Image 1 (cartoon, rainbow, N blue to C red):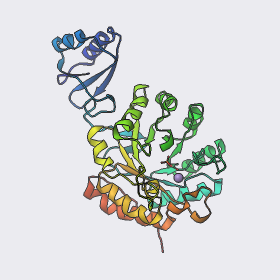
Image 2 (image 1 turned 180 degrees about the vertical axis):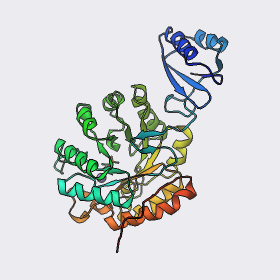
Image 3 (image 1 turned 90 degrees about the vertical axis):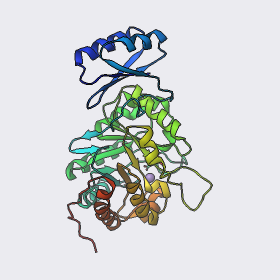
Image 4 (image 1 turned 120 degrees about the vertical axis):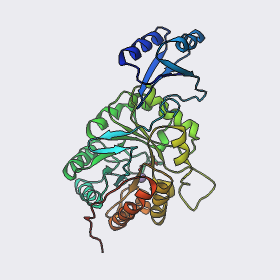
Length: 347
Ligand code: PEP
Ligand code: MN
């Protein structure tokens, strides 16, 4: 259930209403809009509460949300959530490009890739220090040392950083070194991890489980929101279908659907979404055309020798730079701004 205030209600009155709600043993989540405030009531509420709220001064409407997720829904938060990290805003007018290798491999590798991401106009450096590999004998990532290498490269080149966290025990150390924490597709329903991320002070990029419905995806986001972290972005990274030519099927419809159901920013991952380098450029552009707030793209200086199998889907640096130049032209047609500063020279 949500209670919507009339316009321009004072903060004191909102506090009184929240206090009243809490007396019923339920939680109240306040979301301030430009004009009105929406108070989400989470928990099994006594029907008397709805009746009382309807009579209270300052309340204009009380609406029952029938969806299983509440805080993630647009009913609760009609305006887009914009996540601001330093000078980058995710979910607003700006198109945000996250680029980098599948895995952090060495200080030299991540430093050089960070330099190229920055030069091309990207705002965020991606790289996994802990890798969720399908097989236990595959390279599992360089661990905490990789976090240190990536933090240093991000700082040196003026980029934000994003890295995957796989277990609740590692949330604190990942949050110490990275600006954004990524939940991988295999962990979308790792509820202990989601709850722990709800208590940390870093924005979270939640990847869609490769067989998750939108409803399951938004409920996973709800776990993080309900545990106290409002800064969640949703990432479409492809789902498993009967097709075997591509690694996954990038579900482009997810972008407008999630944006209609939810206020959270939506990021597209055309690298894991296709698994094929030659498809990354067209599917990046298609994602932006579909309204994505940002992209997360794998790029490597030596993809043939990358330590994970994801070299086949990684762009070469010149392809990444060319893509970003094209996105600079495309973004304004799709309601976004994006500026590469055109500093990159490629052959
Ligand atoms: C990754 O980003 O490198 C990754 C493992 O992604 P996903 O969880 O989408 O497979
Ligand atoms: Mn990868």
